[in-house]
Length: 243
View: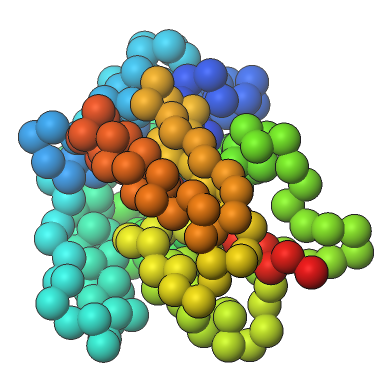
C-alpha cells in the first residue's frame, strides 16, 4: 500500500512547519499541477522541495476548466476535478513510491486536493492510503500582516468567495473573509472597513487597509502591480461593517 501525503505549505518555504518538512522528506516525489509554461506557483513548490529535502517534483499539465458556463459552476469544477484525478492517477500507476501534494495555504480552505486524493483512493486502481497535515492559511497570514484579530469580541467570522459575497451580504453577514477573489465589486460598501492583501508571503506582497471608499483605487493599483511583478495574483481581504 503506497502513501499519499497532502501537505499544507503556507505561502512558501518559510511557512513549512517541522511536521510538514519531515513528511515531505519521507516521500519519493511530489506531484504538482503545471498551469502554464511560466507557472510561478509551480516554481514556488519546486523551491519548497529543494529547501526541505531536495525532493523530486513531477509536473502534470493541468486540464483546462470550462469557464464559459458560469451558471453551472459546480458541474464545471466537478468535471475539472475528474480530469485531474485521471491525470494524477496515470502518473501514480506509472511511477512507484510514496508521493506528496503541496497545498498552497492550508488544505481545509477552498482547495480541491483532498477531494481529488479521496477520488483516487475510491477508484482503487492505484492502491493508496493518505493523510493530511495543516499549513498556515492565507486568512491567518492576512490577520498577522495587518496586526488584527479576525473578529470583534464575541462575534463570528464568515468565510466565503468573491463569487458568493453578495449572497453573504444579503443574509446579514457583516464580518467577512473573502477568498478566491476575481475582482473587487464593492459597490454600496464604501463605508465598510477593508483589510486587503495580495501574494502574501512572497517578495511581491501588497497590503492596503482603510475605509473601502477611500482605498478602493489604491487596492486596484496594488493588485495590478502585484500581478505584473509575479505573473499571477492571489488576493484576499477581510470586510467589516463599521458599527
